[in-house]
Length: 276
Image 1: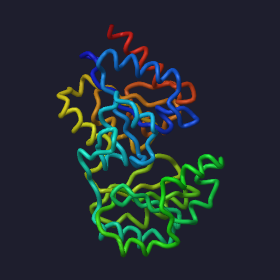
Image 2: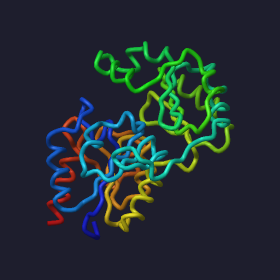
Image 3: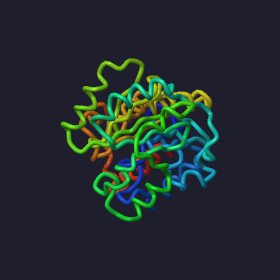
Image 4: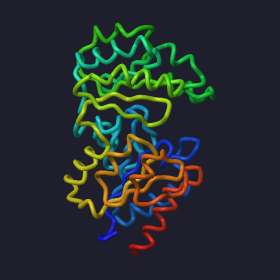
């Protein structure tokens, strides 16, 4: 890097978190080292704030959280700095088109997650462990239909659809192909996410960088899937993990080891060693 590293940003699931969805010991060590050096770390996740790991909410090291793919920039306590969301009218348009194809959905209405009851009962999609299912239930309000949207006011940060096959995913994408003024992306092969078109991890990160007066050349970003492409646009050094999707690897400057071995932590350790 041309300048001393001042900011590192990373996707969480499949990238920064280990296979258990936790901040591993190697990662905790490198975060402490970054704190000691005055390097800002910004978690950038597709998860809603309510689903973000407590580790980032309870530790004063983390000044900013970028959640819901950039729909919300907040402090670690969840106080909004910027919110970007779809109008309820636009959300209803999307739901009306997709509901006949998929009843596996979660809708984020101003930070409250409404979820189809059918999705909560599907262990294959949610995760097979009882612990994961319990976590899933604790963060959502369950509905048997999507009529609840007709009674809602406010705005929608994200519509999230789970899919069971590539063909099913393509059906959803086809249904949405003519919808204007939305952003469509995904964080894995098994989902589709619909949001306000100005959303994006990278755009949110650029706002943080401007507030902190940090140059692009002083930043590094890590990701594993398509919804991390915008994050890559914002940073000076783009690093995909070994388990990343092919499109992200092609956009990357370098490849880190997989999240199975806490590859981001290992890469940052090497990078920090080069700045000393």
